Length: 417
View 1: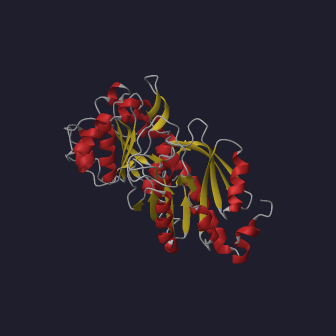
View 2: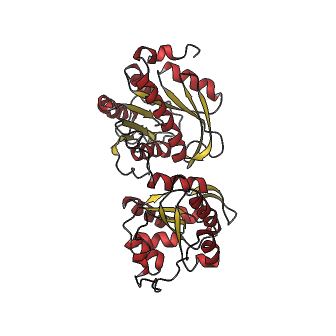
View 3: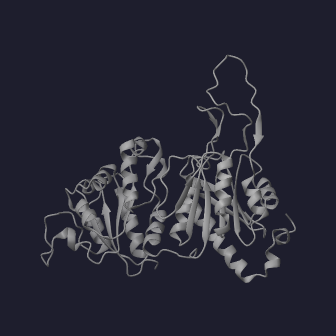
């Protein structure tokens, strides 16, 4: 009963995914919450208020102008005593109203009148979700402290495949628990996360890079901060907005990332190297744009510093987590990297698998440690994968705190590797 005693206002808007809100309501109640449902006029075209009233055993609120039995204005009364305003599904329309301060129905009035935490679960077609207006509204809401869960990627009502599906019910429920009963098991830790690609300049116009979007690293930073850690994010170039409460250093190249990481290393207790750092850089970047001459070009490359190996050589009591993006022979390659770079954990993923790797909102990973433990994590949203990784970090810290320091040295932890 993770939500025992919690009072939740569940807003349901006019999406084909409204029927999933019925299942969400049941799960919230099973978890111990008392739920009051608020439906927009459009939502009532998909599911009747009677369905929600029957399951919640409470009147469903639909009309802004109806007074309750104490003659209180409904948009004030509804949020009194509530712990959370949850809107699932949240359409592009209602999120636009929230982001611009419009209040033309009961739910939008509730949003403006409430001082409680707000959690939104967007649901819409893929092209609509990708539209700059929708993305701008989401960023504005996040900046105000509104939590967003999803959307998931998959088959949509239109028949398209892409982002826009309502997040899985389990993911929404987990996000609710995170908001209302946050785990603080990383309090006291200083976590440094690297994220994104690096750009290695060829000339003032061009650069070498890779396909990393930074989404996995940003999810790790957001999760670490939510669990009480002081969190430092060293990020290569991405299109992502930094998570709230995270200290951010933006860099371009691998050399800049190395400098930023090593400068912060003395204060750090956990390092998670999720960035996809370029292995090589041009030996002689041009000062001016290299003109096209219609002839083959030979490019001389220099190896970039191995930041992960360098940290591993001086990690001391820090917990060090690396990532390995592979396209085959996943476990063997991860085990080699785990040992050679003195890591405590390595998170390996096969980027050739559907739904995993670069640019996706989901991932499929295998987590290995020097004690021989191997954990297969199925296709999940990257925030959920981040939670699994940090769960392992917490367990490692507990082990470090109860183990003789000599036993914890990397070369003695698992002779098999």
